[in-house]
Length: 291
Image (cartoon, rainbow, N blue to C red; front, side, top):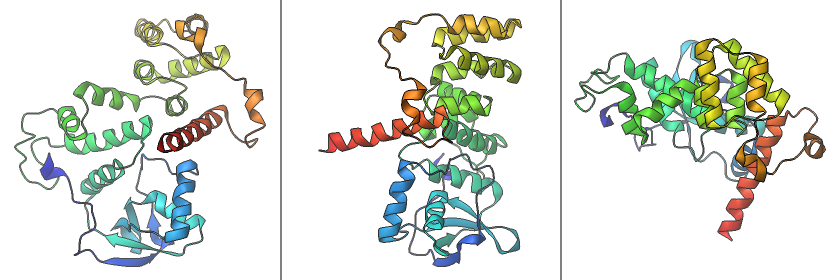
């Protein structure tokens, strides 16, 4: 698989130029979120103090514009700080090459959300699946010959083929459930089971979760998946299953939404509040262990 991986690091041959930030377009169907969270604030502070230390990698597209391969978060932070120009490196890449380069570069991040990883794997999977006997540059790759695409991805990213398949299945979840997965409102194992449900069944499941204010265990999610296979999904059945007392509930720490609402903007949803709290806990935990 090494033949298919591209060298995305800055080399002495690369020419770094300053480019108008408005000429940079986000990558089409970019699977990685760019939002104002704790990590973004940290990046913005760094850019404000030291500037953009790593140039943004782009490729030329139509009408004098450029598509970002790596550096969406740097562009976002720079724009917030009022930058009109940013340093870029231009690489000429075909569509499939650009997808692989974008996925590979973003997997260097310290933390990747489950939904981000799922759609990134899917984008690279679709490229590699087109012709599993050749690399995207048209060269025979003997390391891939005879291997399934999920096995190639598994070896490259240090996952098991089964885990790659689970991530690919997550792309069939409705957006609201993907958000709950990212915000720890739904476990990874349960989410992969729920992803087997039809869209309308997933929406009934989401409604039942909101009514009961509970998340399913793996065994409950597996039962729900089987009910979907049998065509027996109803809102009432889902509520009954989610209402069952789980062992973990006895020792779980919970907060009512009203207790937390005063600490967040009025526009924040419950999932946004949960995610922000987890970011704060993560930062303080890291500070604690460093000290």
